Image 1 (cartoon, one colour):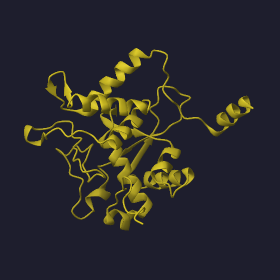
Image 2 (cartoon, helix red, strand yellow; image 1 turned 30 degrees about the vertical axis):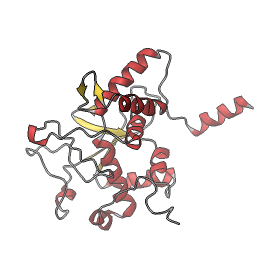
Image 3 (tube, helix red, strand yellow; image 1 turned 90 degrees about the vertical axis):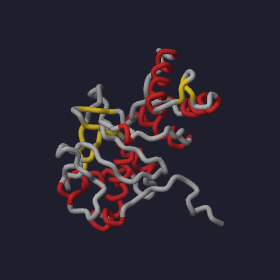
Image 4 (cartoon, one colour; image 1 turned 45 degrees about the vertical axis):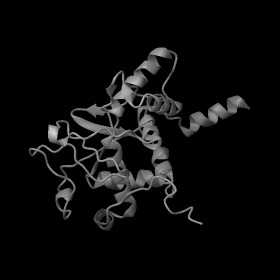
Length: 229
């Protein structure tokens, strides 16, 4: 009876952004910001997030991959989203994204959530789709530090996906530290993202033949299917 009433992690949208940009653009911008909060991909002093159009379509299932591409293009044309390719392999065409928080558009939003830092704004904070409050400012005062909060399995799985790590490692990590009371040795865990990155490094050491997944084009997929026939 209530299957459509929050049975899964909800998407968030600010009414002001929806009015100014359109509903799809507002949700896309919020989702990109959400992933930037969790990103460890730093290039030239900026945090970036990479995702395929198919990946965006999975998060916004009412849009096709092509529809997601058009939404991102409109945000790029407005100067709100920067699009580039920072992949190590030239054959990898997966695009990387970041938000240009210095765009005057954000200053025009009443009660803006985008707050400049020493006139050198590269990162900003918006409400998230989870109950956890996270700041991605590079420097943090003691007063800003908060008590450790263990991740949900959904948050952990989403973070694992951004690293390209096998999805089953999320549950293994969660179960292991849940059994340990979220202790690292004898000390309480302070940062679960950093702990998982260390877990991931150990995984790659234990599995030297493991190759991270890459985006498969439609032509490559068809070739693979033909080879199986």
